[in-house]
Image (cartoon, rainbow, N blue to C red; front, side):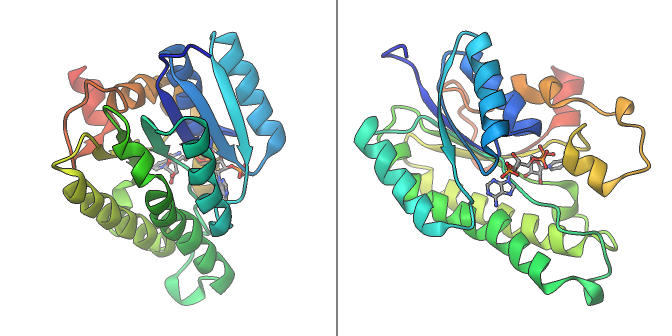
Length: 239
Ligand code: NDP
């Protein structure tokens, strides 16, 4: 690993948007810390990172294991003493259903993965981000966070809470070197989207690789905006 490389952590790096972002961040010179449950998926991402000339540290864990998130922060501190970029990308959809029929186990998972794990990661990683010359944090939202839609209630309420968490953290970081923002990718060609919209032709959707350059930009030291929601579709029109 290049000694001057920025250190970037991506959750949900085993597939989808997290994988594409990890490869693009590695190509842009970051050493990658890759988090997800599926070891095979992390290894495939690692292969792509290496092919892009980068390096990665694989951290297979379940984001519902909150003690492991505490240990992750401690390990990163021991190894590098800082974290420069944190892409809080992992998320679950749950199931699209009327709220009255929402499976309690899926509701618990939505809260644990989409909300609590991110709050616990902020707690664990905040000292490392503040130790960076330019700590950058990006959380993933969704249109339904602000525009509720029938049958999307569990996922929508989790993303609304995540937006609140993100904007609060951004306000708390305003006078520091840390910048905290939100990305709404819009419908993207991934496993999650296929689960939500099984009848849709995926070829009409942007790919994770299409939006990776925006993610790299929002996690770079040059990105000074704080507490903003960037919509990929709007950025695409102006870029
Ligand atoms: P995918 O379902 O393709 O990937 C989700 C990632 O999250 C996987 O790497 C998965 O890894 C990880 N993950 C899920 N649960 C856990 C867990 N308990 N512990 C650790 N990792 C976990 O999703 P996308 O790439 O489509 O979505 C990425 C983000 O973008 C999400 O936050 C999503 O809500 C958001 N988004 C996506 C849209 C789309 O159209 N695709 C639209 C709007 C927002 P593993 O299973 O290996 O643990």
